[in-house]
Structure formats: C-alpha cells, structure tokens
Length: 84
Image (cartoon, rainbow, N blue to C red; front, side, top):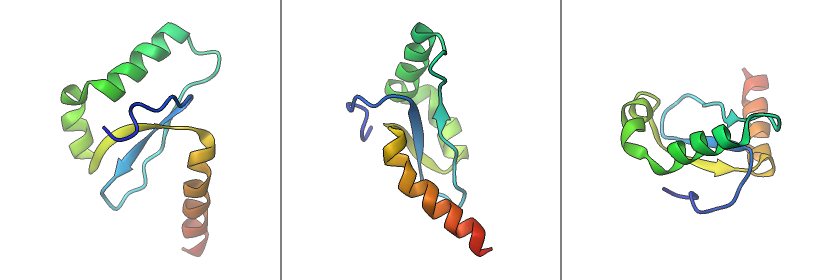
C-alpha cells in the first residue's frame, strides 16, 4: 500500500476513487498507545479484511498522513464547500 512505510503519526486517510470526500481516522493523543498501534497496524497491513469496506467507499486503500500533509486537502474541501 502506498505510504505504508512512512512513519507518520496521528491520521490515516483514504485514497478515494469515488465522488465523495472521506474523513480521516484520527486518534487522540490520550488514546491507549497499544490499542492505537494495533488498529493502525491492522488498517495499514491487513488489506483483506478491509476489502469489502474499501470497495463500498470507492477507496483504493488507507495510508498514513500527518496533519501537515492533510491541510492542503482540507483547504480544497472548504473552498469547494463554500462554492456550493
């Protein structure tokens, strides 16, 4: 999966192929570290259990991103929303 080797931190976002924008999965800094690591590993390294869900979301996969990497997308979504 693209980006799965990067050491990002807090947010895993979808790579969407469909018309809908998809919200990121974000964990609070106070979330149990072991559980966060377990969920993150499952989301990034076990694509088979996620296949049906990803297909239902028109998504090709999940990849880790930092907030800084997500900011330009947030700006585009805000701009598109304001234009409606």
